[in-house]
Image (cartoon, rainbow, N blue to C red):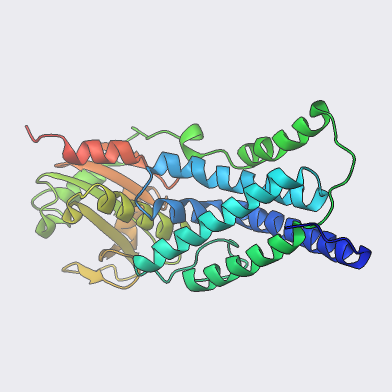
Length: 312
C-alpha cells in the first residue's frame, strides 16, 4: 500500500500511530499492575506450566511496551508495524480458541481497567488492526539512531518489568517449615476434628483459604488448574475456611465461595493450624506434613510429583 502523500493525511496517520502506541503502553502497564491475575489467565489455558506462564506473561508485557514505544516514536516503522500486527493477530486467534473452549471470562488484555470477554476482545483487535493499517502509512522520521542509542531504550522495558515484578519462582521456593504440624496432625487423627474426612489415609493437598481474600481466590485457581492440567484426583484437594461458629459439628460445606467445596471450621482452630496466614497449603502424607506453600511459592512440579509418586 503506497504511503499517503497529502500533509493532512500524513498528520492524521501520525496521530493515530501515536495514539496506538499509547494504547499499547497503557495495556502493558495495566497487565503489569495486575500481574498475578494475568499470570493465572495465561496458565488457565493449561498449555504452559505455571513457571513458564510467569515468564510468558512478562514477555507479553515487554513486547507490548516495546511496540508501544516504537509506534509512539515513529521509528523503525516496518519492524514495529510487523510486530504489532503479529501480536494483534495472535491475540485474536487466542480469543477464537477461548470461544471454542466456551470461555466468557475477561481476557485480561487491559488488566482490571476493562472487563472484556473474548468476543469483545476480538472486535477490539479488529478495530486496532484497521487503525494500524492506516497508521502504517505515516512517514517515519528520517533520523536513524545508532545502535548504542536505541539498544538501551529497547532493553529498558524488559529490565524494568522483571525488576518491578520478578517471577515468583525466581524469588520463592517451597517451604519445608511445618508451622504447627502437631495441631494439624491432631485434627487429621481418627479421633480429631477432621476424622470423618479420612484425611489420615493417602496423600492430600490441604488448603486453608479465607473468603474475601483475593490471594486465596487466586491460590484456588492455581490449584484447580494444576489439578486439571495433570489429571490429578480432585478428591485429593481439600479446602478449609474459617467460620464464626465455634461449636460447629459436624463439618459443613461452602460450595459457592471457591471453585471447590470448602469445609467450614471454627476460626480458632483455623488460626491455630495456620498461624493466621492466608492462604496456606499443606502437602499431607497421611498425618505427616511434607511441605507448606503460601500463594507466591505454590510449586506445580512438587505438587504433581507428590500426588503421582507410587504409594509404598
